[in-house]
Length: 153
Image (cartoon, rainbow, N blue to C red; front, side):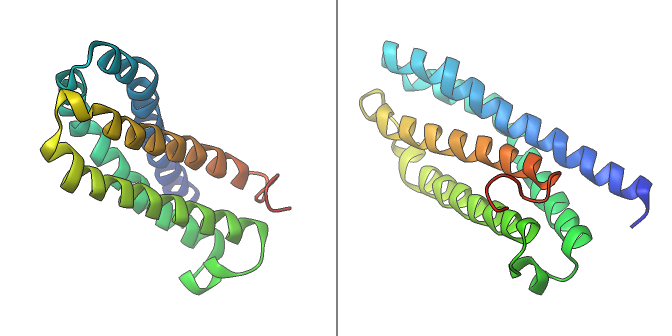
C-alpha cells in the first residue's frame, strides 16, 4: 500500500471515528438527558432520524478502512490473532465492533420498534453502551500508534 493510499484510508477512518463517536457523545450527553427529563421518546427519534444518515455510513467506512489498516499493520487475518500489542489491540477493536453490532441489532429489532415515552430508559442504556464502546474504539485506535500501549505492553 502506498503512503498516499495509507494516508487516505487512515484519514477516512479517523473522520468516521469523529462522526460515530462524536455523534454518540452528543446523543448521550445532551439529547438523552433532555429526553429522559421531559419523558419524550420523540426527542431521541428526531436526533436518530437526522444522525443515522451520516452515522451509519461513518460506521461502515470505519469497518472497511479498519480492516484495510489491520491488513496493512499485520498482514493476513491469521496474524490478527497473534500475541503482540498491535494484534491484541486489533482483537480488542473486533470485540468492540461485535458489541456495537449486538447492541445495534437489539435496539433496531426490539427497542426502537416499540419505543414509547414510558420505556425510553431501556433505549437510554443502549445509547450509553454504544457511546462507551465508541469512546473505547477511539482510545484503542489511538494506542495503536504506540504499539498497543498501555493496555497490552
